[in-house]
Image (cartoon, rainbow, N blue to C red; front, side, top):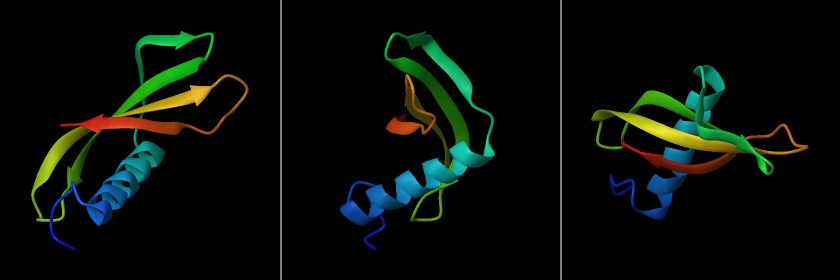
Amino acid sequence: MSGKWSDALGAQALLRCCSTAAATTRSIPYEPGSDEHGESFTVRAILQGPTGSAAMVVSVWFVRVGENMPRFVTAYP
């Protein structure tokens, strides 16, 4: 691994870290919250990057109406 989140392997690692955090951390409704399409929420967690440094990362998730599986939308520091 090259040690960057921006390469393909790093992106997959980031998604795995965010998914693990979402499964083990309390989620917070995301403004504006729910609408006719579904419900958005965020998960805030400290993630360790491929270089060993840690940072607070906010991931955004969306659950479509009629579904119960959250879908990853984005993440930011």
